[in-house]
Length: 459
Ligand code: NAD
Ligand code: UGA
Image: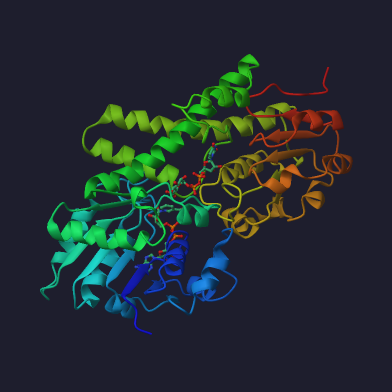
């Protein structure tokens, strides 16, 4: 079959895979190929055992795979055949050299730029899908323009705003699609070509065009604003615990102001995920590199509060369990950084688990999707950690439960049965405020919510 366009995506991860699957399903006239250097990932994208857990993803992949959606390890062939190349490789925080712990590590991204130049023999549109520091497109343009073949690459920024766990819905019904380009004739034309792909299913009013730098920076700013809301409410949760105010009631009251809005005001043990921390650190680094130290300090505080919140949770567990948890069995209900994903990157669960193990607790981790990743995160600590998918089995002889992830299934557990199998006094630390605290208290638990009064049976 002859396709109208050949679209390539370099990077078959949490973004590349779902995004391209949705594009392929909505644009049957385009051939969409996703390439990756990771052979295991590609093998799984070509099976029904997909490399990532994402509700609805398998159906979308199945609807297009083999028709106009292909997964391959052949990066070179993919580049040669492509008219449009989305670059969706990882851009983690740098762990070495200048900017270590702050700046983005752009080595994977830069490698793809060189691969594109080496393997192209005609003009192409290059789309930055990865989250990148502002003005990265300029560097990419410079590498691409170095070609001696007389071909032109137009670089466009199309940052991705999907959230894990709701990626398919976010892609099918995005709040907006942002496309940044050079404000030249060829730049605008390239932006229109990318807009035409999304116009197959996204209303024109939701497709926003901007200049390249605004698009790149908007992505960092969007994540910083979202994370800032979480740190704001988490900071208030600490004050609530001192004053007997209830952070849930505050979120509701404050969020009812339409100027503020109700979403992203759930107090928690802190935000996790591969992007919020990385992107804010990157924003802070960029601000410092321009000498904007006050601006950098402002955003850095979002991270400081996030670390404080995780630490507070651990300290509360230790303090309330009579200042020692040596040899006590504690169940972590959840380990993923949020519900509906198996992803554990930067999950607060990692910090909590390590700290509790340092205090010599015995841990049992129970999560419907994240146990394989949890094992990798806690490798080397195997002796004191058990991994048990069944929460009922996990709780036998335990003294404490700590909710790490807001899985729906945890709300429906039979806590009377769990209580009966636990040692007494039994404790619940609800790091997500998802359980029915009054009910747990009446069953006999000592209950420690976040930012709400404790419910204990101690005199
Ligand atoms: P990921 O690590 O899951 O996937 C990246 C993939 O790129 C990996 O499979 C890796 O093998 C591959 N890769 C690296 N170098 C390559 C090369 N030279 N050739 C071919 N493949 C190569 O990362 P992700 O979570 O999909 O994130 C990708 C980008 O999207 C990041 O910049 C991230 O900040 C951004 N982003 C992520 C999310 C999210 O929810 N995870 C959402 C929005 C934006
Ligand atoms: C986030 C953004 O929401 C996406 O728009 C963005 O594309 C993505 O980062 C990215 O750039 O990678 P994601 O990290 O997948 O998406 O998930 P979120 O739903 O944002 O949750 C992030 C963390 O914040 C989770 O640990 C979650 O539990 C926590 N959270 C979220 C709270 O603690 N409270 C809330 O009210 C909301």
